Length: 538
Image (cartoon, rainbow, N blue to C red):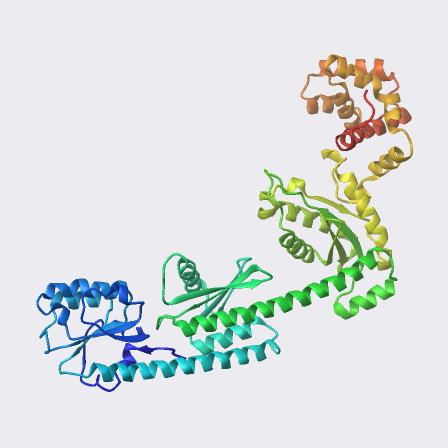
């Protein structure tokens, strides 16, 4: 629907049948909103844009040099074109005027005989006013059709096609997550050029491009843009664009509401599953409806704690992280059921493959997530995972959930050598946690290791490091000295000190086992001290 006339249409009207288009022939598609008769050469303050100017040249009949500034005023005020009656006051148009008009595609039309300006304005204004009435009617019709579509469409793509067919323009929608959709569909360099052109239009006034923000709950959700190679966009295009953006906002809001409702309903069911309220049979029956082609051989729960945003650490986007987690673990053979609870992300990971290598597949998936470019840039060291027991009976998932919480709590207490996300790997740390909870672990550690700790504190020694390395190397002096980067004689001297402090039997079976356990307990208490300001000092 054209809300205004173009120069091309006007040239087909009465009184223009014998006119000549002298210059600016490439500007035939220019829009004409109104017609003015002007004989003054100073008219900038009288124009608003898209006016067709009729003149006899009276203003410059005695000085044709005034014509160039006059044409420049019309170009700068975005006038649609200039019609000049030849013979009444002027007989020709200077060549430099023609060159200027051609450069800016500014139409100059000549009447070679006297024409009634009053009749011309009356004729053109009648057409323009009628078009305005039709415009209002068309907008109302379009809006009604659009509202009807909203009740029926399943995908926003149908709305984009409706807009594209109605205006016969290129349509593009750009979402905040950098996704986009073009209608008609275009790809590659053509698409990139169009996106660049639309983005540039924000800074440069391009009459062939228009964009409209799609607002949802007061926030910008996406942007709708239209572009035409053949013509400048008019007010009708902009109104239709605005109505369509509003309709899309309603469509997206409805989808978000449905999705949120679905998530809430699914989240409620997942929480009841985590709490052990369903049997294995009931769970599998439920999954057969939502995932009819998938059979789960077992499952485990993973709880994830993301690092908070700080001055030096950008926050990890939760939506992006959940999408990445789902993508990576589904490739590893797991069906993911996510939920959030108490600021933690919780993932039920149903195993679609053989349970024999579930742990290896999970470990590889965690490695991929931590090493992903975007997560690495967000300081992945602040991300903590805790994976509970693997269960083959889906009704026992509450056990995996409980142990996943324990595994997550223990993550901050693990040394780098003993790091593991999996509850089943935290053998001694699980025992240490229980001992600390139900007895005085600090005093027990003192009983075994106090002499060594006091010696290191008094003499700034490294006996504790030596003891840990010696135990880890199973008593191999050569391997111990190599790992500590010390000569054999220095190691012998330190081992003599350890024998004096711990007893000559500290490497004998039961004694060694107890000391190894106490060394692990000491590391555990040191890590705990950072959290709750451990009450003992050695």
